[in-house]
Length: 118
Image 1 (cartoon, rainbow, N blue to C red):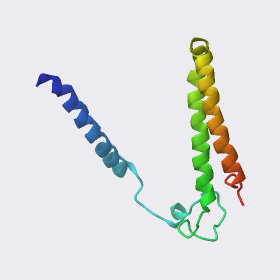
Image 2 (image 1 turned 135 degrees about the horizontal axis):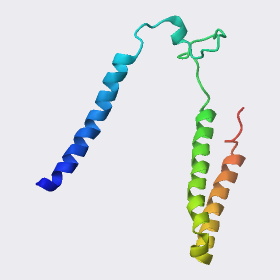
Image 3 (image 1 turned 120 degrees about the horizontal axis):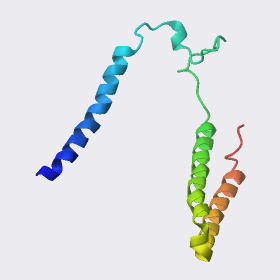
Image 4 (image 1 turned 90 degrees about the vertical axis):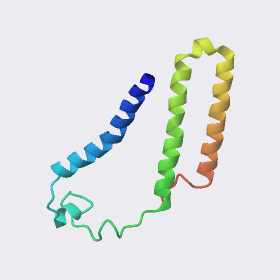
């Protein structure tokens, strides 16, 4: 039973940390709402609508997801580049296949017009 004590302590810390953080944030925050804080931008320019009335195009989210997908590519490229000498030809062929799949996906998204703003 003594082996489970560190797991219990870790679980208690993991549960209490967000609760304590939220309580501290509630104590520290400013409690006086006003019209300036409700505006979506604090640049001094009067907005024609509120933030809740504005609708964003689905293309905005599509481009964000595509950015994340193609950005993950670099996460896989870095370890491959570091271990390139040890992976030899097998690692090179695997990376070429991986990049070919990503290139096909990129060309597909480009031809479908997913990368255009308008």
